[in-house]
Image (spheres, rainbow, N blue to C red):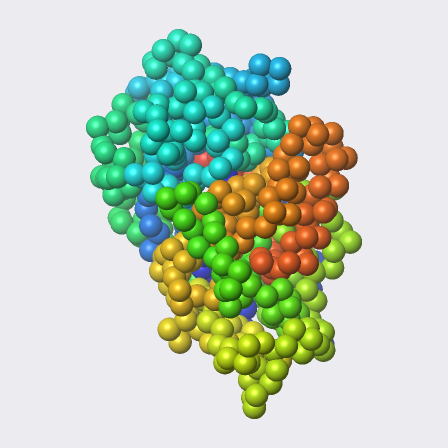
Length: 589
């Protein structure tokens, strides 16, 4: 399950990838970059690989990575990126994300018995040589569900496993629905569920956790101290192709081969991930400082003619979005609680704010078309689940003004006031990025000014990535709306993103209709594909209309790869945890 890695900074979150002072419908919008990127391959050419060599990978981000080396507690994309040489999930997939038997473990579903059986292959070992066991699977669920860890990963979806809810609420010492028929040191874990779901055949379904945690290595650490422990911060272990050699906190991670790796010895001698500023990324590409660097879309023109580089591209499962705070997370009850009296709990206000944004013109103009507006919360890559009839919040100041007038947001001087006559001041939380993030956000603030809305940045400035998510997750009362982004799961179920019982529903909206649609799209009836598609379309229409969360953009993701490298691929069947499977990457002979 890979749903909901939150993203930040340029090159990871391309909401930072633009420059603008004030731009409406720009006549000079160019799509040349997009035309070029659409022709790029999704992987490097296959050549004969040689053993040995070291590569350097740029982690393009304007803030140190958090550095929690554990999937159950890790939420930020930079930490996931720098963990990727070691952090391997239990299952491999085909190019449609369907789980197959080629990975570290196999999955067998039995709808009649309501069981999901995970069998770890013999020889899949942690980097200290210990076999991965059934207990390691159970322990990962315990980390997520135990309140003492404060894991952001817990969602009511997991309650489909018998006993999970009771364990989470501290009413049981163990999770009764996880059976280990060969004992804790065996290789089989059977999940006994209330029912199976249609998405369970696919990676990222949100019901089955796809990782294991090393129980033998972490068992003596209290759950409350796990996240800050040296075992997860300084000396983590994994069962992927590489093991940690050195961590420079927040800045770099050096990886060397895991001699116990179950697929055999990986080709490279060393992989080093190094944080670099987005402002330095184009120069780093041109000077070949790194072997792999994510291209910042606003800097594409500066790097497109670089020699001895292969550009590999895809449109990822991702979106930027504008979220409106309309409630709070109740930690005791593990659910979102909506406040009907909250400032942003007015549909007309949210819709007007969305129509006033000149999103498409801005993104296309300043990234040569590499970033672009998207209409719904289900990306086009999900095929027929995507509702192509929804056009999204296209730039329309007239409509925005009409909505506000009709809803009673009258103008008093320069600014509109609330329907009750009180002043209306809206606080926007936005993330820092490159030097051009500031004019981008100021553009949107100017757009809102045009419809009489007094919007200003929280604390009068852009907010650093880690602080940004601290405010969003903890429902900081100074935040009325926020611009953020999600790296998405490979299975389109929305339960873990937007349900009442998930912390990841950062807007904190809860409505009977949303709950009903989320349940229906994952119900037993949804094993019928047409029914499930219809429910996804209904949900997209509902979310578009309510506008609690409004998608803004997606973009081409382009990596500049040393032309001597082979085996670098963004194809689903060659990824793991949404990342490069580093076992395949090598220098060509």
